[in-house]
Image (cartoon, rainbow, N blue to C red; front, side, top):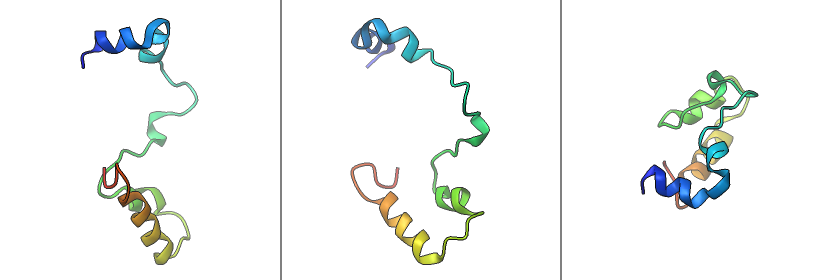
Length: 67
C-alpha cells in the first residue's frame, strides 16, 4: 500500500497523523525493538531472573511474538 492510499484512507486527519512530531518524549528515551530488548529495557531494575524470564515469555508469544 502506498502513502497516497494511506492518506486517502485516513481522510481529513491524514496530515496531522502522518506529519505528527512528538514534543513530550525525546527519541533518546525510546527503546528500539530487537533481540536485546529486555536486557536494554530492564538492565537497571531490581527484577529477579524469574520475572525477566516471564516477561520474555510474554513478549515472545502471540501474533507479533518475537517481533
